[in-house]
Image (cartoon, rainbow, N blue to C red; front, side, top):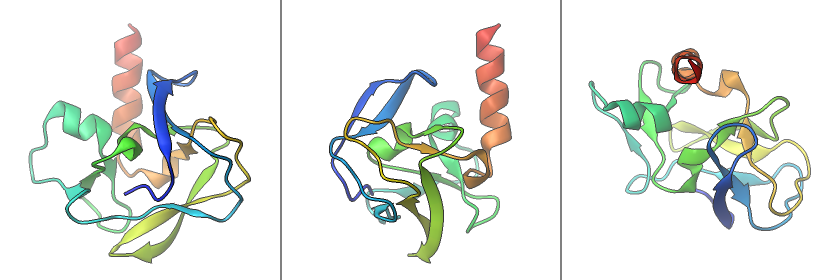
Length: 127
């Protein structure tokens, strides 16, 4: 669950994205896995669930679907969020740099074990 105020908006990177509603300092925890809000998906997730979930690096072979705006965090290069320490059996997300208000929040490809599948889907959607 996100620990900061956010909003959704049109992303210059891909479709829609998750944006911070306030300025953030570097090193702040902005997302922590929260049972009841976020969930580990079963064996056969739907296409849309898989598209918005991330492949857990803490639980190999499992997908986690965020139950809030975090499901709309896109990949960025460079990313402004990093996977950090384990909290509740998942890596939390911290800001890697100071972030201005209304900036899109982004993660690196290696933070999502399912990123190759997502990139393939995005590429196929462009054709």
